[in-house]
Amino acid sequence: MKTNWSRALLYSLGSSLIVLLLIFLLGRTLFYSYLSERISLENILIWINYRIGYPDAYIQAGLIIFLLFFIYFFRLEQRHRDKRTLAQIIENMQKITDGDFNHRVPAGGSGELGQLAVHVNRLVDRLKLSLEEERQAEQAKNDLITNVSHDLRTPLTSITGYLGLVDQDRYRDEVELRHYIGMAYEESQRLNQLVQDLFEYTRLRNKEMKLQLVKIDLVEMLHQIFSAFQLQLKEADMDTRMTFEQPRLYVLADGNKLRRVFENLITNAIKYGHDGAFLDVTGRVEGSEIVLSLTNYGESIPAPDLPRIFERFYRVEKSRTKHLGGSGIGLAIAKQIIDLHGGTIEAYSDPEETVFTVRLRALNPDNPPPSSVRSGSF
Image (cartoon, rainbow, N blue to C red; front, side, top):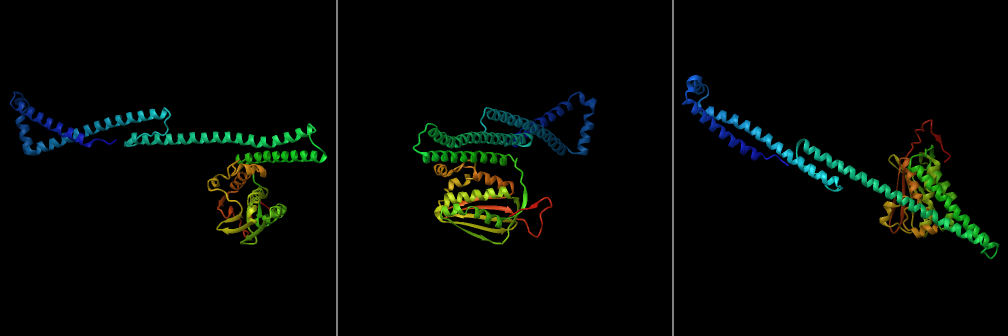
């Protein structure tokens, strides 16, 4: 809300003319009255005429009077403007206090009240953001409870069912008995793995897990990990193709935690990419980072799901994950571990390939790690 200059100017001009007219009439009255003899108006008028001149005297007096009135009316207009602005701020703040956080205080004023409106709007924006974060946290907590309940109920139901058959002697022979016991054992293992995953994810999320940093050669580590997966790769009819830019790629990392990341990525590639027959692994150096990519050529991840695949319990296809025994938390754990190492992990997928890319800070082999850091076995 801007000050009305024209109104102050108009009021000042009119008031100045009125005052000049009053001065003229007052002077005329005094000149022709008996008071003129006592205050010697003749001498005063002679001094004004001699020092200033009658036209200049009127002009100078008029300018002084006009400036004084203009200052007065301008300040008066400012006060009226501030009152109107303050009334608008109070009115708009009342709407905000009633719960309309999308409402904003018009920040058209200048000076302190204008700054007040700006700060009120910033406060409302922060409050709205805090409420939204609180709502999302509450929703995340509810989703966590729902997902944990669902994932715990599924194996428990199976265990209860198989053990119920055994308890009721509803099996034909010892072979079928062993089958039921074996299925119950597999479901108990799945339940145990889920609980362990939840525990590990919670510790990672709350920054309770400390990293044991060692110097690690990622090339050697990946060769060892893939050696352990030879049986699963063979059963999935998949071949591994590894390409590394350098024979040694060193990083400073926690070997056990980093191994968990690549095991999760390889497990996912075998589960969902076995139709592509190949699992490609590449490693290269980009600036101060080592970039590792795992590519499979199976079923792609839909574009709407890509931004959420690292969220806990998020599944691209729940029925498929259920039959394959996934907990929906492996990629979330992988991301937390990479984040703790100061790196990044991202996914890309199209109809031809799905690529998971891990970036970690490279360790220059010419510069040895600090004495507090041990050399790893990889």
